[in-house]
Each structure stands twice: as structure tokens, then as C-alpha cells.
Length: 404
Image (cartoon, rainbow, N blue to C red):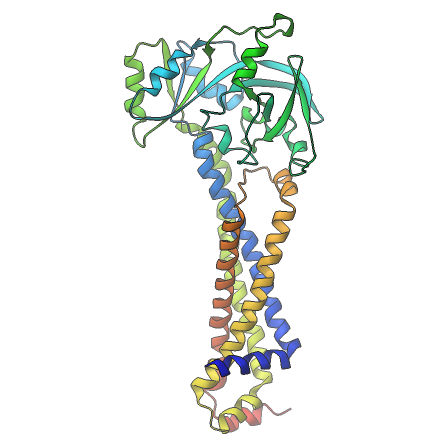
């Protein structure tokens, strides 16, 4: 069996130009397939993160503003309403509650952020308890110091994406007389979150102690609590919170994620369609090229069989050549696709107005290996048809038709 692969490899080297066509076809197919599935995989990851970012099961707000809770998240309106922070601890005691994330609405400020001038709502959050923003940011591994902020895509985030990969890039924004370091950027959501600047809760409370800064916030108060419940327990938790008589309104937040799902669904369908088209086109392309290559070698194949080689041996030899060519070409194609995407990550995030969570290198390696196996398999299956047709001929017929 080893000798078969050696002969196949020597045939590939002997006819390098012929083999280059087949390997090149596999490389193009692998490149397109890798890029297509890479985007699908990234969007799937972003949707999973989005179910936590915008899919808080419940929104708890002060009494009287429950009817507008969803609108405030979607439209990004910052209103001065507060409730005691003790509400968070009370809600957290409910066994069916998995996570709570308090936020404090500050005010809308006029400032310049990453070269973008405008009026931006400012919201304070607790990074230790947060299960919302951390799963919707461009870089999920970053931590936040006291005077770091996270900005939306319209609040200068579009410009920041050009530089957030740079090791020595520093961007600042002035809020309430204090300079804050821009630490991360949120993916576009199509909601008011895109225009919002998020700062740490402890920093906001520290600044609120100075009346000269125009930030006067009552002590130990918050504006909203985002609640994540156990699966299917949102209605039960909602009733439990209402029974506590906390003087709050409880609104369901499940509709928020649907906005993003609706936004991404057509792109996902198009990507799956592209993957299907790539697979079909790759098969036809390999079949066409290999058919031409086999036709060129009809005399050679006829002589091989006339010398006593069994039909199954000829099958294995030709399909081994297809497999090796497909493997070599697909590895180059997958590698080129990975390099293209990862090296231009900032530009891709800048110009694609949809959330993408890029996979880490292990996931990227897995995608590359899967693409290599898929393209190599397609090459072998597509080559089988012309090989089968030629090998059905009698040796003398192949030799005669193979003569120039």
C-alpha cells in the first residue's frame, strides 16, 4: 500500500503543471469554503453571546416605568429614575435566578469620542456582575480598570476598531471632567446601545460626589436590574419578584434578542447557501479538471492495465493522486483564508455592520481541518466519476484513443 502512495506522489511531481491545476482548484474551493463557514461560525458565536447581551430574561425597573423598559434599552434613552440597590440582593436570593446585572443611568453628555462628536448617553455598570456587555464586545478577554469605558459602535467605536488591535494605541474620552481610557467597543446592535458609553459603577459614584461636575446621583441607587433566570423560569421569577413588594415593575426582555436575530438571519441563510454552492461548484470543478487529466492519460492507463495491473489498483492509484492533490491544495487554501481573515480582523469588524465574534486559534484550526477533509473528500468523490468511466474501457481501447 505504501508503494501505491509513492507512485501516486511521483506521478504528481512528474506532471507538476497538470497536478497544479487540480491542487489550485482545491485551494480556491478551500479558501471560499473556509471564509464562508468562518463567518457562519462567528455569527453563531455572536448569537450565543447575544442571547446574554440582549436576552436578559427580565428587566426590573422602578415602579411606574415598566411599560417603557424595553423601549429604553432599544432606543438608548437615559432617564433619571432610581431604586434602592438592595433590590439586587433581594432578587439574587431567588433560587431560580442565575445572574443579575445592575445598571445606573447617568445622563447624556456632549463630547468627542474617537474622533466622533455627538451626544452620547452614559450608563454605569458593574463588571463583576455583568453578564451583558462582556459577551457583546469586540475583545472578550479584556478586563476593566476603574477609569476604563466601553463604547458603542456609533459613539466612536467604528473609528476605534481601526486601532483596538494595536498594542500601543491609546484612546481617551472626557466624561464629567475626567479622562477615561477606551478599553473596548460593542458590536453594532441596531439599538440605542450603539450610541452609549458604559463606565464602571464605582467610578460613576466617585464622580457623583463632586457637584462641580454636574453629576448628582442619589447614594446607593440603581436604575435597572437585568435578570437571567433558569431556562423556562422567567414567568415564575417575575411573579416571585412582584410578591416581594419591592416597589418595582418587572418586564420581560426576551423580545430584545429577536431584533438581533432578525437582523442576522438573512446573512446566515446567505452564508449557508454560499457554502452549499461552494461544495457543489468544487465538485464539478474537480470533476471537470480530473476528467481532462484522465483523458490525457488514457494511453498510460491502458498500458498499465495491459501489463497486468488490476482495475482496482488503477482505481486506487488515480484516486490517491486526487486525494494528495486535494489535500495539498486545500491546506494552502485554508491557510490563506485564515491569514486573510485574522490579519484583517479590524477592517472586517469595521465594515461589516453585524456582530462577529472571531473564533480563537483552536476553533480556527478545527475549521481549517474540517475544510481540508471536506475538500479532499470532494476531490476523491468527484474524481471517481471520470476514473470509473475510463477504467470501464478495455485496455486496447484506452491505448488507441489515448494516442495523439
